[in-house]
Image 1: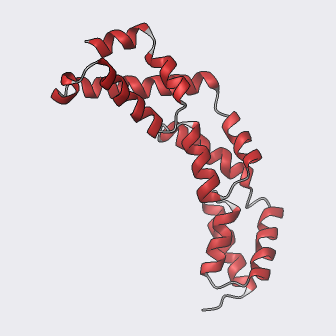
Image 2 (image 1 turned 90 degrees about the vertical axis):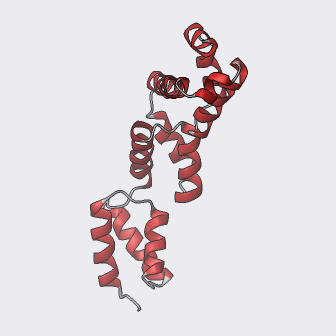
Image 3 (image 1 turned 90 degrees about the horizontal axis):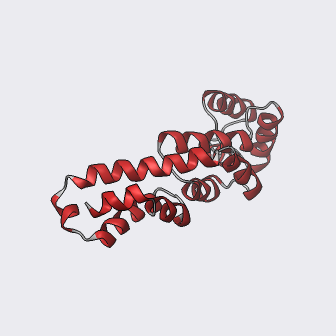
Amino acid sequence: MFMDYKEALNKALLLCASKELSTFKVRRKLSNWDVDDETAEKIINVLTKNKFLDDERFAVTYASSKFRLEKWGKNKIEYKLSYFYKITPDIIDTALRKILDDEYEESCEKLLRDKLNRAKDTATFRKKDFYKRRLYLTNHAYSKGFDYDLIKRILSKREFIADLNS
């Protein structure tokens, strides 16, 4: 079913008013509604001009929520913003700079500590040697998108080494 300009604009306004969206996702929605490309561009321009659509605001919100709620690292956030939402690298950099370094390191350390505390009680973890335990934690934090150098630095702390040995 073909959707005319006014109907598509109203539907897009409602959608953008309810949650933050990227330009790419709105363009895809418009395409799914069978809105032609020229009309879709007009709608996107109206949404952008009236501040209903802002990729930077979307990226900052997305990065902040994924970091705080999902405990994702910067690498995973960057990948998702780039690949799934087609956000430009400069906007991604702006969004990631909003995550404070101290908070980022604390989050990674807490993630590793929580994983270690949960794994300590399992028989398979206790059977593993120090290096396999360390690798297990490293893989977990790395899969969440944290930097390898940060993970390595945290796992090299005395209290982590003691816990991994016990």
